[in-house]
Length: 423
Image (cartoon, rainbow, N blue to C red; front, top):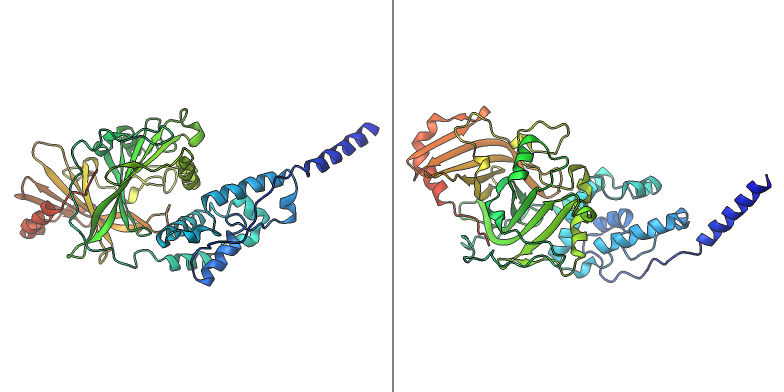
């Protein structure tokens, strides 16, 4: 009994001493809060400011060591990623980008942190509040600028001497030969994106072996600014950047099993100023850990056990005369009137065949403000120089024999689609 009393007393003393080991959590007035209407800032203040601001808001149980140490770490990490007390100093577009990311994290259930909500239920974002945030951001409400005709490819040899990221992650000049996995219409920042994968990635997507993706998987996400054309279609314009991911669970163990890199502009300038830039990548992709940290849904007919792992809805039937999704992607466009998106593909055969695949758009379940291919509406094949045009549409994408009369005009349209500019 005496031994138990001594143990309890020693435990109380040790607990009391631990309370002294309390490194501070800096607190200061806001210098540049996010520029948003009062009702939007009220939602952010209630649900986000406890961690993502320079205010110090701790409940009594948050201040007890050792819980305090965990709370402090979460707050300092959160401020580093997004601080609503200072984000207002950024350009308006950058502020909006941060808010789009925040809404996507809320939509995915990643923010506020589930563990935080268990002890702080008042911070929960209600469905009505989430709808208000989405309505305020309202992607696709403004048309992109008119096209400048800035298409084609960069100067010869532009990929030969591209510097790697500051953390040593190398640039892979072979990405332009990889095969397309999907496309994305980013209404949140006015860009189009090709998601390409190397052979390992393509085989994994086709088989549904993506949870996790196998070692050796490589992705390239190529982005262009959107531009409006005189025909009302929105096409890729100025090249923005290429992002690369490489799966190597052992080599990149500290960064969720992936290597990360980003190169901006036609001169492909590495994005990172120092090695810590990779924290931005892993922090953003953290909510997708159940999908092996991958946001993109590859178009595939593979049978998988979970939803939102591959994009079955956009897969093409095996009855088509060609399977263009395995060809090179040349360009894409969106028709805002019909809410469709199309990608132009080209094969590598001696007699070139181009295929224009058109899908209905659907909201990307992984990113608010983005749209991805939905149900396929048509596939148009142009073989040679327009002499052989075939169209497949409707249920099951059966051949549309009546399209022959308009074949010449459609073939000319397909042949006139300019390649998206590449570095």
